[in-house]
Amino acid sequence: MPSINIELEGLEQAQRKLSLLDDDARGKAKIATGRAVFKVQRLAKQNAPVDTGRLRADIHAHFIDELQGVIFNTVTYAPYQHFGTEAGHFPPPQALEIWAMRHGMVGLEFPIAQAISREGLQATPYLMDAFEEVEDDYIREIQQIMENLS
Image (cartoon, rainbow, N blue to C red; front, side):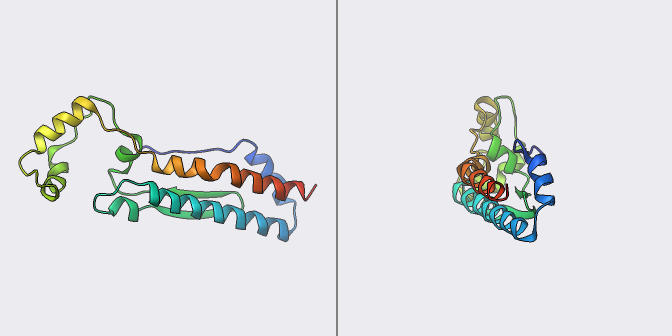
């Protein structure tokens, strides 16, 4: 499954510096990271395309440590919604059956799959957009914590 992995420049240096710091500084970094992780999750849920709500409900967040967290989906179609597809990707018509029923298009699964193959699917980068919205404030907050220690 496609994924986005974002490495912040200076992450290893910040982790080394944090490991030498007192519990108060580590606690502040944990709070800042947790706040950022869950804000990205909230914004991603707001940005996610909605048909049944399954994609939106499946956006999970896990806090890892002082400077790391993960926001992800597990539904199989999440990467296609997020990254889109290029022309030439032919979705299996059976994957469209339930969608076609909900939208009153029963029997049109194959022509819809053909159109998707011909045109591709437009990306809806709900996770990346959410991350980019939070990124600058998070980096600024971590930098402040580090500067107050120097």
